[in-house]
Image (cartoon, rainbow, N blue to C red):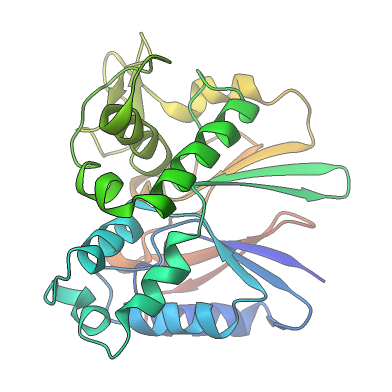
Length: 268
């Protein structure tokens, strides 16, 4: 049995089929975990979700910002949204909503003596891994119990700094932004959600440079997607980026947890 974590698919269903074939995925034995952003921009978002639901016993995922966007569209009964329209106008969009809404923002996977922490954008240094799981549980509970409130109030770049005293929509928005949109932090730990490239920017530090401090032993890893401009490169052995820009003409990439082997297929 092997476990594979797959980077941002973003509706690139043909490439997903090719990658699944390349790794010889056996749904009765293997496990697939998607690092968020299964949908949007690519032409086959509905097909990607149909694949996940069909193999739901062996497929898991963390939510990305595009997945949350889809949830908000279904929640508000929207019928048009470019590449997401086939889902919104399908016979049963609630089927996709019910599958996605139960997905977390952070997953912890244990494999023998190794631990893998998976989040779409990453895990910021000012939260411990245990705190990240706690906040994920809090957000996920509220998302399931009051989806309209959370989904309609998640948009925006503020607040930019964590404070345990944050409440309601400000608290939810900050947690969502960290786990699904984060790229850079400034030297004071403030989120900067404007800069998206991978060039060194004065006063800003990629989140994973500081989050390397969270990793206390060589058998612990953080796996994330989201940041296509990195092309998967963090220069930190135990922090693995998987967004290699498939939807932008790059590659769709997976890592096998048992041996950290990387598998990629080019955009068709």
